[in-house]
Image (cartoon, rainbow, N blue to C red):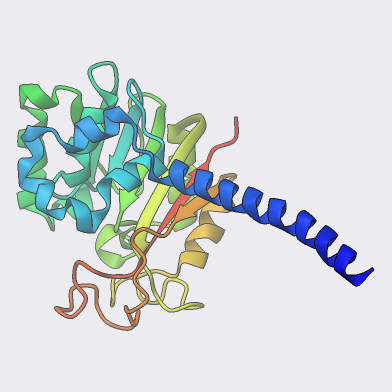
Length: 260
């Protein structure tokens, strides 16, 4: 009886393993698949100066995770040098639009990048990009958008130089800016677990759990995370500008959906 039982067990287990491996392979394939419109936007010759950072910054994977599509409207908060702006512009195309938003308070600290985005928006190649400038505590958009995106800046809003914006009030404004079913994508530097917002102004980091708690509190539904920017070698206790970690910090990427 034992040999028969063993054979039956093997017969049951082997197909299960095969199915599991197939499912895992399909899942990995889905994660690795990059739509042609994302590839085209990333490979746009107009952003050749950014190409050297693409592998490190995982731009294609982030675009796929953000579910940005041709024809959509995107609100990018604090666009910096325009690294993501250029890719968003290429993806959404002529039928879509990208709103690059500078809070007035942040703009005072980053005049060079503000000027660069103003120049970019004036170029014919980026005719679908508009620059918005408004108080940090008064986020608004000319029309509802499909995606609100912020990279390495969620932690800035509650800081003194931004006027200590209430994160929950900010999240409510993001919620209002989105179409039903729209996505809020947050990328930021990881702070020690349980630290909340204690390190936002000192280390320029934030605890991922406090972000999730705040965003969900206004009605968003957590819709997944990506680990493509995670770095287990980051101690989480040094400034993100420290030479030992700059450009390679441990970063979380959260996606939240506004219910339909």
